[in-house]
Image 1: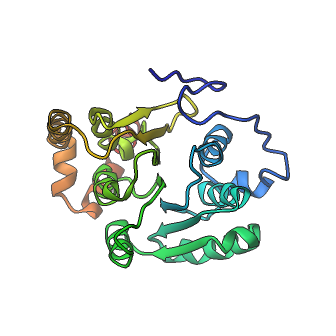
Image 2: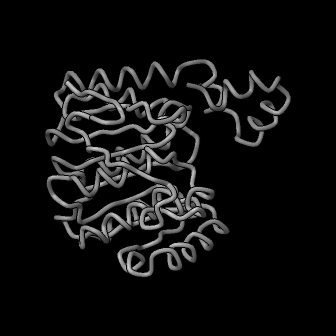
Image 3: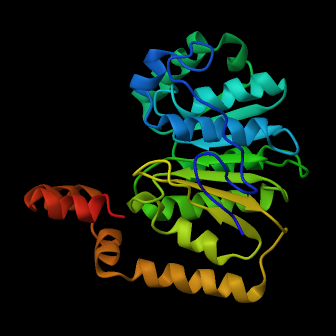
Length: 264
């Protein structure tokens, strides 16, 4: 049974004391540009530093400008003196700035980083197809687009390459972005999961316990996903083009629009 609080996280990474003004940990610019809370950044760092086997390969979807999770993953790997991160970003202007930011913020860590431009489904498929059969991804961080189905697609592509003991984290777990993945993974009995109370957005954690789930738990996860996708607002958003959904949201009262686009 997992226990969650800011001092003890059961079988999950042990948090260390984090001071956002400590120049050795993070700069003021990191805090301003990143979208993660101090506790979330520390949790990500701890997950890599305290892993029983130091992650050799990590993959991140959604780097933003690189000051948040990307920078902390690279710094942790540099501290471990092992590991390589593949960072996927779909917005060209952000991608260009992110690459420059990482190069300036951590010259040594940048040597462990391969930026990948493109949408996650295509980028992940192309990356995996170019790897040898024994390729494994020890650490995954998902923080891409707001469509909740994206994280499901990303998980299904990556899950066969995550070894037992491998870790998967996702951001905005309490918002629409994580609406499908969190209950889906919670239903699979070959993953240990938790949602620590670090922020309103939510940082989801999962660790792989066995290579494959039982047939019963996989069926339960699929049923749960179908139920969620058939909710009226999710069904409508899946049918309508994104530009029309944006227009509709703009016409709705602010509170209602937020509940639909950024729900718990």
